[in-house]
Length: 136
Image 1 (cartoon, rainbow, N blue to C red):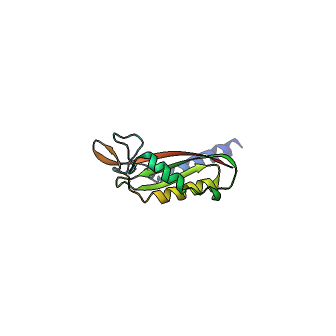
Image 2: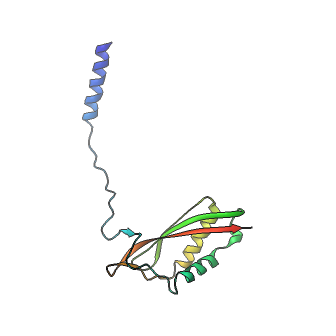
Image 3: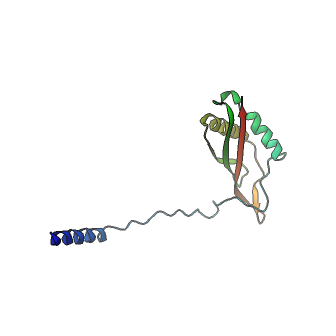
């Protein structure tokens, strides 16, 4: 019995060493595609952040949101080197609120921002937008 056990362990160890090594795909970000969260010059919406917030909040249709009480979510998007919003992501517990935030951001995404800058060069910037609403 002992010999069978040792033989099976040796057999499996030989089998594991004989497998092909497959190179892993790189998770590195291509140079120039880096998304920054801290920049020298912040991106700016035409008219300022308050104008952006006003247009964003006007774009939310509260009658499409299912649920009552205090609801919250966080939207994240990238302001590209060209000043346009891309990669919109919304996280929150209420699906209908998430979808309405996404729709409102898609409507204001048509307006070009002045991009964020590092050392005078435009860069991609991750913008975080917490959203809190009280639905009656």
